[in-house]
Length: 204
View 1 (cartoon, one colour):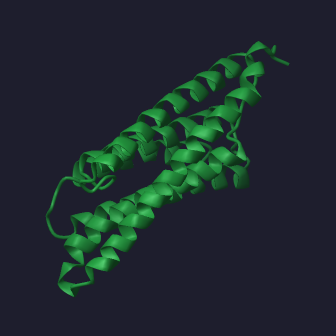
View 2 (view 1 turned 45 degrees about the vertical axis):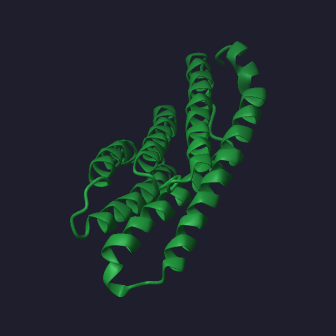
C-alpha cells in the first residue's frame, strides 16, 4: 500500500500514451473514451497526493515524481492538442501562440525541475507553490475542455447540437489554455527568483 501513491503518479504516463494513440482515431466512442481518460488522469493528480497525505505515505521521492509526471503529461497532451488542431482550429495566430506557450512550458519546467533536483541533492525538497498549483489546475481544465470538442463533433453529432455550443466549449478551452500559459510564465519567474538560493544551501 505504501507504493500506491507512486503507482497512481506513474499511471499518468500510461494515460498520456493511450490518449496520444487514441486521439487520432475516429471510431465511434473513441473521442468520449479519450475525454474520460483525460478526466481520470486529472483526478489521479489529486488522488495520489490525497492518499499519500491521508495514509502518511508522503516521501521526497513521491513529491519529485509527482511534479515530473505532471509536467510530462501536460506537455505531452499539449503537443497532441496542437498536432490535431484543437489548440488553434486553423487560426494562424493561435497556432503561433500555442507553440510559443508549448515551448515556454517546456523551458519553465526544465529549469524548475533542474532546480528541484539540485536542491534535492543537498537535502532540500522544493514543493510546488500555490501559483504553480493553480497553473496546473488551469492547464488540466483546458486539456479536458478541449478534448470534449471532438466528443461534440463526433459522438454527440446525432443530437445535432448547435454549432454555437461547440464554439463556446472550444473558446473556453482556449481561454483556459491562455490563462494557464500566463501562469506558467509568471510562476516560473517567481519560482526561480524565490528558490534559486536553495542551490547553495547545505543539507541539514
